[in-house]
Length: 145
Image (cartoon, rainbow, N blue to C red; front, top):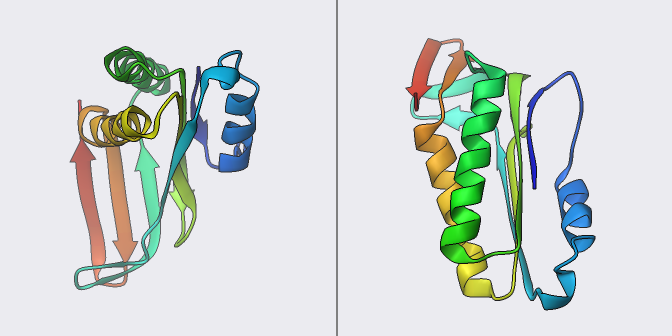
């Protein structure tokens, strides 16, 4: 399992990196699906043209631990082989990567379901503060916690 919470300026892990790691998994011979999700910064919101986005979390290690629990629960619930997650924090611009998830499983149905569950659970249950900055002002969104 790969779970990382990375400062945007620290390191870059791509979806290709996650997929390559999954393809080296010992259960690859029993796998028939890899599903992925790449969450990126949207440049336009209702009545707002985003200039930049600042994403933070109060405790990086706690956030990592919470995501690890979400991943483990999804692996057990959907009986998938492996799940890798990278969540970036820091300052971002339109099109920048924020959140990567890759799931390796035996069949497409449960693999896709596990992917959806990880995406939604991280989005709503893990503590993040998102500041959307535009000429119209700053919109702050708190999630999880």
